[in-house]
Image 1 (tube, rainbow over the protein chains, first blue to last red):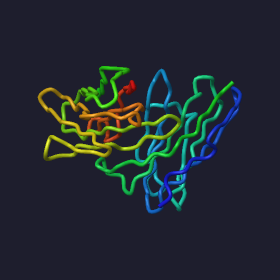
Image 2: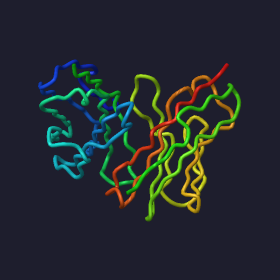
Image 3: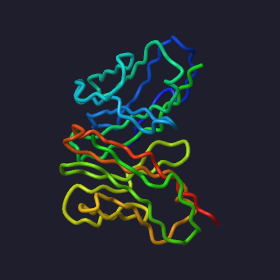
Length: 114
Length: 114
């Protein structure tokens, strides 16, 4: 089975712009979670989608949003980019949404905001 | 609030020596515990997880961890490390307190000395 894929892998944007990141989960997986990883804050949960519905949301401002499509692919959008949004954004998929489920991570999208 | 503490930011160890990476958590309810590994420029990969039952959990690549409820710890061990174990290791906890979202430790970089 193909793993979790994320596109693009690298992205450079300027302050005030918006960006959309894409995540394709492992075939058959219906849950997709997004995380932000920075040297200062470490790994932080952004949100989780299951069957096109947002199940959980982390403590991030409304500039961060996401959605999931019927084929389980997910997109994450960040509007009005700030310098502090520079980070590695990781997507993870799992078969279902239970806490015991193993999450499989993609390689991430590295976003640099100038 | 739930938290995870990885006591060491870096652990240098000689090749073929044993290693222990420490993880402590705070939670007043039952928890699920995970160790993930992140190789350079890659996403995270599950090493092992504790859901219930035996407190000694065996994972991939020869790693194991022991859940100690009284000490609220979940330390990761390997009897003999290889150069290929060079990576960053993350401990994470999930419980009702976090609405079953993963709360992550800051990570421990394992540095293997030849």
